[in-house]
Length: 522
Image 1 (spheres, rainbow, N blue to C red):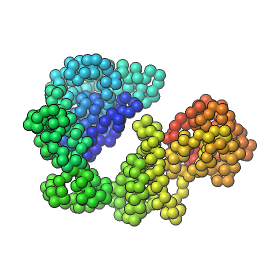
Image 2 (spheres, one colour):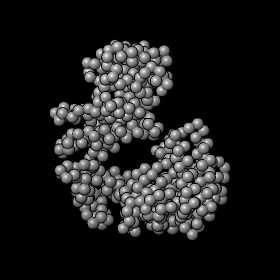
Image 3 (cartoon, helix red, strand yellow):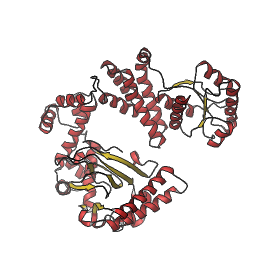
């Protein structure tokens, strides 16, 4: 998990916890804390977060409160609390291990009711939104041991793993409630007031591009008066609503200036700002430079020793590819070529980087087949621009694979998905289509110098063809030169071992990773 540098975020359950109802990660806090940070520099989400500082020391900023934390500190942050971890000005980056979960996924009744004294086993008693404790020696060892058991269950997903996770979460919360020090608790806020302020902030993050968005409209949608919401916002955050809205919009403008080639007029429109003159005036007042100067400075930082621009445009290619914006990707790739960025850099850090991210998300059930398909289409559009330049530059694929659905089987959705994932890894893929007989696999592998043969089957009745492919490869004398991968709904690891194939993979992303590994080994 990478927390944003100056960009407001609101992560929803649909984005993080679609299939897996608990999220765990270790991250390094590098951004330096400044006292003038506003709420727009913080992020918040719909989950309870339990974090342990495992190395170093730094700052936790929650709402408008600041807490210095160090190794051994455990912080439990309630849902919808704007917060962020930062390193001190003279401190090194520090490390935090976190767990995020939706309380309603794991607990029932009063344990999951925010207004109950027993909510999360009383960790947030007296309406405390962020509770912290400093642990040492045996106490820290106890908590870390529970963390390790949780992480093991989440990672391995053995039978009944959800029951085990619930048990460990229960023990962790009860243990932490005993260790908590009320003197180090942050943000005492009435639940109803917190919900109103959080809802206002959420609306800003979702609709900051709407130039007609006002506090009055948000108050009306929450069925409270404008003055009441304004007072709550100032009391609970330490700032004024109009300053927060302006800060969010300006931070988004900074991101667009640094990462895109949008014109200032487009940025004004996309960030909900009033007009170009007021944008210039606000920006210069806030950052002591014009938008053009800011763009020049930030892009100058993304230039390597050879004078080539590295991340801005390439990151934009990767991001738009992940969103499946094929036309935009094609235009950005051409723009990168025109700016003289090396072809292999555009390919690796733009297109392939985007597909690798999609592949990982697909493997983790964070995206599904439709998202992969549109991302692959965007990848192909960008690759069309690069194809003649790749040939001129003599850039070679990371390996060569032939793939097809076996004889008697006409299903090709899974096969096509695997092909796209493999191409996204930089492999050259020869697509044999469907209803492919064993001889065609072998002759293609020989004639095309393929390092891997990939066989797909959806029907149980066609699985035997895979065994024939292995036998034909042995008869042709290429078994020691070519690896054979198999996959499909009825295929298993046991069947792979039985027929003597080299690798079985359960999904397209794993298949692409395995193919790269096998090509490197041949």
